[in-house]
Length: 329
Ligand SMILES: NC(=O)c1ccc[n+]([C@@H]2O[C@H](COP(=O)([O-])OP(=O)(O)OC[C@H]3O[C@@H](n4cnc5c(N)ncnc54)[C@H](O)[C@@H]3O)[C@@H](O)[C@H]2O)c1
Image (cartoon, rainbow, N blue to C red; front, side, top):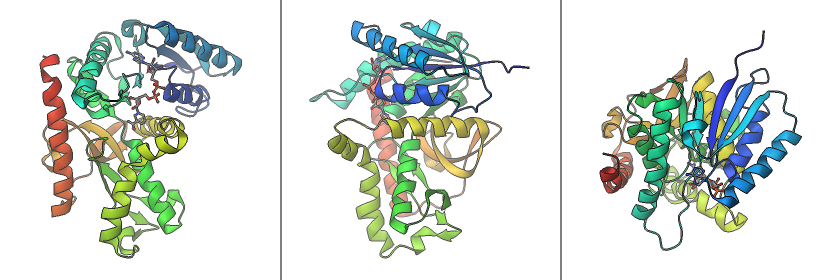
């Protein structure tokens, strides 16, 4: 008997991340090769975006994906999120030069308030929401707060690209395969204040920090800036922001959320107060996932340096929330 199709809503579907993600999902990379899916694509209502999404649909048709039961295009989140089991929120307003972060937050608030309300009224009650659009932590917070009938546990922000970048950097430093590296994660905001942490990380069971010459210097002066500035570096070299790696990280995030993981992974999730991170702010934490439920890894030592780094992200996120709080009441 055929399985019931899973409904996946994707916003910003004609953008460069949406484009990369659609073809991987339709090809069975997310849920497996025997799971039928329905794609519900949301694009901005302007002429250019609606024209671009038509082109994406033409390409989807030509791929003859056997798992794809139906694809629809929407301009209204109420129809785009109808009965969604998974919602990937990529579409957001890009930062223009000379734009203050608070201005960007305010513009994006209106998008994510509308989408949060729509998820609240029409999505499946156990919808898994992954927000990708920046400023991602606060956009997730806004979406979550706009959906009071859904559990906070339905809402997550993508810090997985930062997590993957941290693993890639350590693998290349140690000349080891990426698959041998465990227990790396990233605390905080997806911004320059993020804190990628490999104090507990191992390669083939050996602590990585013991394998790196002058570990403390390398961590502070090479590793941390390399991870937090990786996005900028890619833009300056490629002439466009990360797309395939961001799509791949989104697939990793949702796949692990559904199927579980033995390794530690990073998810941006509403804080439950762990590690003195104020409740509800969306923060990168190390988690393990079982039966589609994530659990924060507890009892990690927070040394003075780590506390300082974590507090920087907390302060930044508190200020971001303060700047939009009048909009979400
Ligand atoms: N969290 C992360 O790690 C991470 C990594 C990379 C990029 N990003 C962010 O993801 C977002 C998308 O990046 P991209 O490279 O795909 O951008 P893009 O400009 O190529 O695509 C964005 C798309 O969103 C659409 N859009 C805008 N407003 C919309 C709305 N209200 N509803 C539906 N669609 C809307 C646009 O028309 C466009 O097609 C950006 O905010 C980017 O900063 C996050």
